[in-house]
Image (cartoon, rainbow, N blue to C red):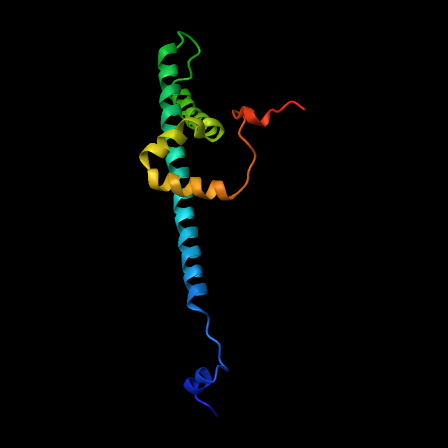
Amino acid sequence: MQTIASQIANSQLSLPSLSSAAQLTETTQANEGLQKALATREAFTSFVGETFFHQMIKAMRTSVGKPAYFHGGQAEEIFSSQLDQTLSETMTAASASQFTQPMFQLQFPKLANVLAAHNSKTPNEKPLHDLTALVRR
């Protein structure tokens, strides 16, 4: 029975190369960085969008005032508050990324660069505002 040292010396036992181990470590770190950037962007978009839309809806409701008759009292206040929260979440999911993306790039430039590098590697459809996609044949 040979020892491991003699097997390595005789090249009977192969070890993973250092370059593949370094590439694996680099890929793992890149994936962790990408996941961190995506999670941060999602949390930032959610927070900024919901805060913006909630304040907008709240200002809209205060400008109208309460009706003289047929006001639901405290129950209507609670329901309208919950409705406003649901509306702000829905509006955030639908359109908040349009105005939070530039804010994210200014607030977190390193994470924005990670996301931009990942997006440049993966081919995707052109955005709607890119008019170069409209080519006459």
